[in-house]
Image 1 (cartoon, helix red, strand yellow):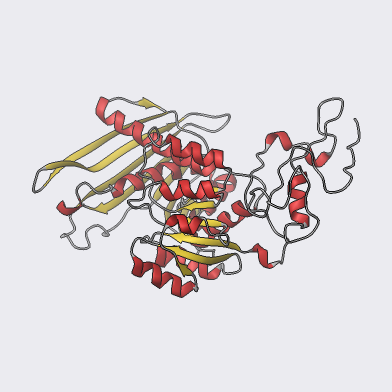
Image 2 (cartoon, helix red, strand yellow; image 1 turned 180 degrees about the horizontal axis):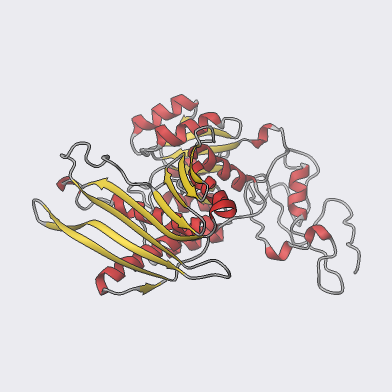
Length: 421
C-alpha cells in the first residue's frame, strides 16, 4: 500500500473552497484556501480533508480515516465548530406558527438556548410574528425569501405549511439552509416528487418532525423489545378525533396526518418495511351540501418474516365520527396509543411518557417524566444533523414512504383488495 502523499501547504486541486455555510468562498480561487480570516479554522480544514481520498495500488483508501469515504455522503452544509465555542449555536429563522408551538417548540428552544439562536421570524399573521420575535429578541421579516437569504441564518424551522406550500422549502434549499419541517404531511408522493429531488440535490440537512418516534415511551419500548419483550408480532394503534364541522369541509383532513404518522411509527417500532396494506373506510355526508367525507378508516400493514423475527401485522385506525357538540366524548376512556404483543410479553403505550408492560414476572409500570421532552429530543437531533459532516436523508425518505403507503391504503379501499407496497 502506497503511503498518502503529503500536501504542501493549504492547497487542494479540483476541490471547492467553502465557507462556514458550505458555499463558495469569494476570497479563494483555483483551489487556494486563505490562511487568514474567520474561514481559516481547523474544523473547516478537516472538512475539506474528508473529501480527499488517497488511493493505493489496490484501489483502497491508503489512510484508515478515509476507508469508509465511499459509503457515506459528504454534504455541503453548516460545518461543526470547535467544542465550547460560541459557534456551536445554530442560528435559526422561524417560518409560520402551529398548535404545538406553545407546548413543544417554544419550551424546547428556551431550554436549548445554548444550541439555538433565533434570529428572525416570518409569519403571514404579523401579530404572531411580532410576539414570537419579541420573546426571542429576534427580527421580524416581511417574507420567507428575505429570511432564508439572511447571512446570519444557518437553518430554518418551518412550523406550518400554509398557502405558501413548498415555496419556503425550495427557497431554503436554494440558499443552502438546513430545514426542520414541522408542517403537515399532506402531500402527494408522485406530484411532489420534484420537491424531494430539489432537497436531495441541494445537499442541505432536512429533518421531518416525527414526534411519536422520539417520545420517551417509544425509546423505552425499543429498549424492551431488544432486552425483555422480544420481537413484535401484533401492533394495534387507534386514534379518535372530533368530527369536522360543515365549515371545515374542503380543508386539510386532520386524520390524514394522524394515519401517516401512525404508519411511520409502526415502521419505526418494527424496524422493517411492510409488503402489503389493506384498508376499509366509512363515508358520511356532511350538511348542507351533503358532501361525502370519510369519518373512519382502518388499515392493516403486513410485515414479512425476517431471519429469526416473526411476521408482524399492524392494525391502524383513526376515526372522526364524534361530533364536537358531544362534549368530552372524544376523550372518554381513550385507547392506548399503541398496544404491542411481542414474543415474550405485551406492552401498552400512552404518549408521551407512560409505558405499562407485562411478562412472566408480572406487571411493570414506567412513568418517564424525568426524561427529556419530545420537543427537546427532536431539536437536539436536528442540531446534530445540522452540525454533522454526514448527511442523513432518511427522514425525508421515511416521510415519502409513509405517504405512499397511505395512498396505497386509499387504493385498497377503492378496489377492495390488498395492495403491495
